[in-house]
Image 1: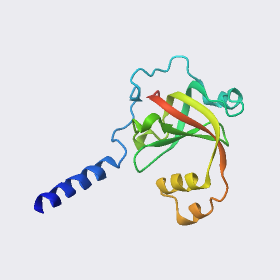
Image 2: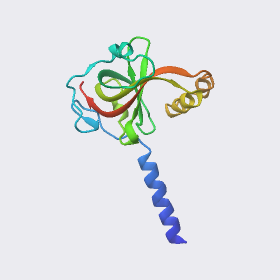
Image 3: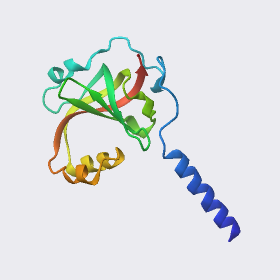
Length: 158
C-alpha cells in the first residue's frame, strides 16, 4: 500500500511539473520544434490572408509578432496578422511547447496555415487556458472564422 501511495505521488508530481510552459527568455535565435527551422524565405504574415483562399491548407514560413501564449503549457500561440486580425497556432503532434516569454517577440513560424472555423466549445476551452474571467468565457456564443497554423518549428528572430 505504501509503495502504491509513493508511486501515485510521483506520478502526480510528474504530471504537475509537465503541465507548465517551458522556462526561458525566448532569446533571439532560439528554436522550438523542428531544429532545422530557419528564417530563410519567410514572408510577413500580413500577406497570408491573400494567399489563403478557401479552406485549402498551405505550407508557409511567416514572420509575425506573438501576442499571446497558453499560460498553462505553452501549447498554443496567437500571432498578430494585422491591426484587427490574429492567427491561432498549435504545435504539430503536440510535440513541443513554447515559454510565455515569447509574448511580444517576433518569430518565424514554419508550418501549415489554413482558414478554419473554430467551434464555441474550443474557443471557450482556449479562453479557460488563457485564464479569462467567467464573464468573458460566457460571452463566447458564436464560432469564429480564423487563420489556424500547425507549427513544425518556430525561430525567435527579435
